[in-house]
Structure formats: structure tokens, C-alpha cells
Length: 479
Image (tube, rainbow, N blue to C red; front, side, top):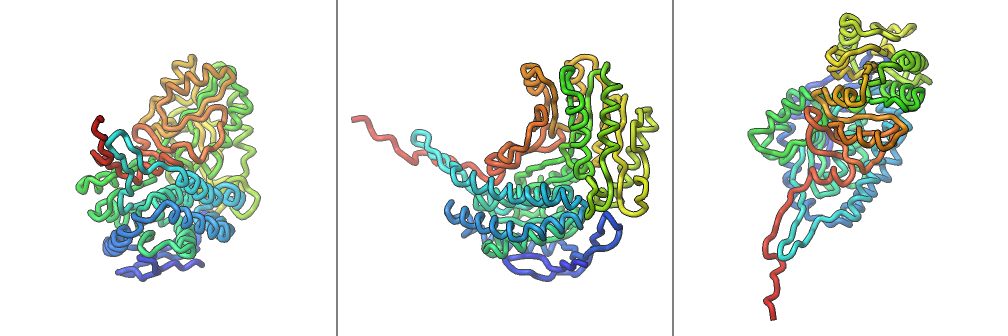
């Protein structure tokens, strides 16, 4: 049983202003696996004051000092790697193998990328007599989700540290253990007091207090579009910058000449990873209408070969994070059946043999139309919807016919055609033929998938203000 009842403010572990506890539920067992304190606006105020004081000095540190700090964090993270992986498995149900090969390693990836970017980042540029200066924006509020918990903490905290900002983090109350280990890592690495502060609590109380606090200069939020709208509303009266990475309903366009087993099977497996709890998952698969039967067969095999079970065992996917998510996924699966989509495999209820835990059957729907609920709503579970199309133009139109625009996927062998389609898709990131991860590529969305970008040098920009100093280098009078 983990007990994390203190907050990290001004370089110390402190009690909340008004003690109140929250249970943390292990989604594989449905049992309580720990307790955290629920913070309040008063705790946020304390943290903001510490961050504002620390900003006075930390904002003036040199590039070399911040590189050294990040390198110490990197070394300490590597030392605590096993602890991090175990925590993520326990708090949100990621299989141990996924925690060890993806969930925990991506934290190291963001630190290493941040160091590399910082070494050559151009903070100052002269244009004639004018100097353009990029300066730290100030105190940053960070609100992060539970699905890739340390990824979304690291991709915010690292660029903030690299650019000289201070911060207040509210991690998800559903998956708080990894955030505590992250905080212990930063403390052990010698992050100066007040530079990084962490408070637990609910979005309605702590998240809202962060978004609306006049002492916070920007808010970086990752989560649902619904919650993102509330963050933006709370932030509006103080006209602070708001960067958001929100929901997605990403199209996966399989072109006529694609390798069907690879494209369809790989697309299904991609959705199943992390129990479907990835905002950029390729959940809407578009296939040529004449190949619907072939796609169904491949998708069925891919889904039915995906093992579900104890995240500490050998299963490929574990549970979804909590009862609320499980109930939502069940409701949407039922909607797919009721609205006439073809249930290829999976369906409602837990997988056979699993009577406890928030487990979901790997599910595939076919003959889906884009007006069906399963094609429109973000399910955030291991559910794939297959839609047919007659022309590439129709595929692009359907792919873009969504309120979201986070990611898109295309498979095909005619690279000219594939690139043409990529250029027409309204999404922040487009992957061609399963294009691999690029830690420096900007990540973020169009439309209701958010605004701003994270990762790499694009992530640095969110934490910087731009100042123009006119006449900095006066032109010499002509001789």
C-alpha cells in the first residue's frame, strides 16, 4: 500500500493546508492500492508563491547550468527506472512489458531530447539593429492525465526547465505514483527550491485553481477536450497562454495498393496497445470498399490474438484505468451494435475468465459509417471501427470529417499518392506506412484536438516569450 500524503512545495515535502485523502485504485484488482492527499486552492497559492520567488533567480541561469541540471535528472531517472516502471503498471494497468519498453523509457527520451535541443537552441538573434530575445515565460501550470503518465509530465517539465521557467504540476489523481517518483528524482538531482512544485487533487478544485491563478503565466494541459474547454475558460480572465493537447479520432487510410496484412493487422495492434488509451490511436480504419471482407478477416485475427489479462503477467494488454472509463467503453460498444455496425469480434463485457478488473474485450466493428457513434466519439479503449470508401478523395473527406485533428495514418506503396494524401489531411501529425517515433517531431492537434505543440524544439516555444529590442546594435553612420 502506497501512502503519498504530502505535496512538494518550495523544495520540501509539506502537509496540505486542509487534510483530505483520496483512494488510488489498482485497475487490475479494483482494490485500493494507495492513498494521496487532495489539494485545494490554498495549496496552489502556496506553490505559486514559491514558484514566483524561484523564477527571479532560475530565469537568469545559464544554458550550461540548465544542461548540467537536466543531465543530473537523467542520471537519477535511470537509477529509478525500475521503480518508475512498476509504479505505472500498478497505477494505470499498463502491462509490465509495456511499462519497461515504452511507458518508463519515454521519460528518459524526453530528457535526452531536451538536453540535445538546449545545447544548440537559439535564444538570441540579431536582425540588423534589432535583437530578438526568447525569454522564459514565467510560472507554468501543468495538468497531466493518466494514460501515458510520465510521458506527459516529462514533455512539459523538461522544456520548462530547459528554458528557465518555474512550475506547478497537478498530475492525474488516477495515476499519481509515477509523479511522486518523478518528483523524488528531481529533488535528488538538486532542482532548486521552488522551481518545481507538485500538488495532487481533482481537476475541479486544483486544476481549476491552477488555470485561473493570476500568478501563473501559462497553462499546459493534456486531457479530454471537455476538460480542456473548462481550463481555457478558467484561464481567460487572466489572459494567460494556454497550450492544450486534447482528444483524437484518428483516421487510418489503407490505400488500394497497401500491404493489407501489414497495414490492417498493424493498425489493429496499434489501437490495442495500452488498452486503446492513446489519444492518437488510429481508431477509424478506412479501407477500399472492395477489400472490406479481406480487412475483416485480418482485423479479426489481429484482435483475437491480442491477449488480455494481469498486467504483471504475459498479457499484451491490461485493464483500462477505472470504472468510469470501463462503463463509457461498454456504452459505446453497445451503441455500435445498436446502430447497425457489424461486430466482427469482441463486444460488451469482460473477456472470458476475467471476473474482476476493468478489462475490455479487444473489439472490431466493420461496415461502419462516419455518422455512427463509434466513428464520431473518442472511445479510449481497445475498439477499432472499419469504414469502407470508393475513392481516395472520399477517404480523405471522411478522414477529415471529424471535430478532431490530432493524428492520421496512411498505408500504400505509391509514395507519390501517399504523400499527396498526407498533404490533404487536417491533422497535427501524419504517419506514413507505420513511420516510427521521432522524439523531436512536434506533437499536437488541429481543431478540437488542441493548440500549441509539444516535443523537441517546438515544445520549447510554448515556454518562451519573444522580445524585440530595437536599436540594440546601432548602425554605424556612413563614412
